[in-house]
Length: 151
Image (tube, rainbow, N blue to C red):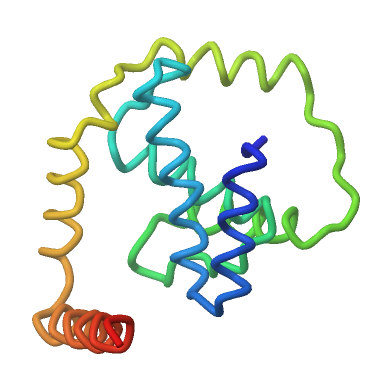
């Protein structure tokens, strides 16, 4: 269950008209904090990010599942499941046994997944997979946003 503060920040982002990925970023940030605090670990930075995105979808952030070819079939299916769960108004209570097992498994994982080095490496490898045009477009968009916000 995400913290109240995280939900508040995500709602704020939505109200400001920010992209779903920006809203989901709050949940990923929370996940990184949990790992750094020692609440649990993660096998890799990629897994830590995936947990955060899953939480975001379940909390109602309209973040679409990854496109075909970018992630495995299982990941896409799970993302669709999370989206469906986030769209429902009634929340079914999670299984105590299962959530405890997941928590215990994550506690056994290393805590280096949320280190600055691991996140930097993850961002670098993710950027390398993108085309030059795509990166350029993103940079131009960021520059325009910066310009707009400086006024």
